[in-house]
Image (cartoon, rainbow over all chains, first blue to last red; front, side, top):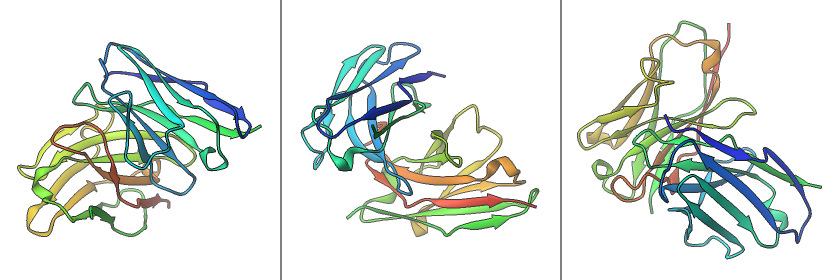
Length: 107
Length: 120
């Protein structure tokens, strides 16, 4: 199976900060990389698919980039509602896998 | 509006069987893959597998192959996840999620989750 590794696992940040989360695949997955946000007690919410396509309704401060094995999720100016856990997920293989998650927490 | 409504929380004993459900509405149930995702307490998301309700084709994660069974009943637009013999380590929140278009691989639609607690 394709392994997905996220870093960091925890990211202390302040409102207004530019935040970058990294996701690395164990093999090339082209652009078959998706990002989700999850808040406590809630189901995950799809933010970005195909590495860089923002879902409808997702604020433009979120952006994704990368291809092959290395990907990033960037929040250009962190807002209070953005404190949450973020997961990457590959859909290159028929057996999809998630990264371990990155929790963006208040510094 | 696409909706996935999951069955309620369950409390079971080790060794018992269980089947939880995920009812889809607002779309053609037989045309989209549905995935199942486990989240153990305080942990991350784990992809368990997917089922295509149109023909009940399935793909399982190696970690869950043989441990659970996915099925679907087209007549009532419901997908299922079942265990024949639960273990304490099956205690988790389980989410169903629907893929976007055919084989898109990403999940814009999620159920609310079913909490399964296995304890003696």
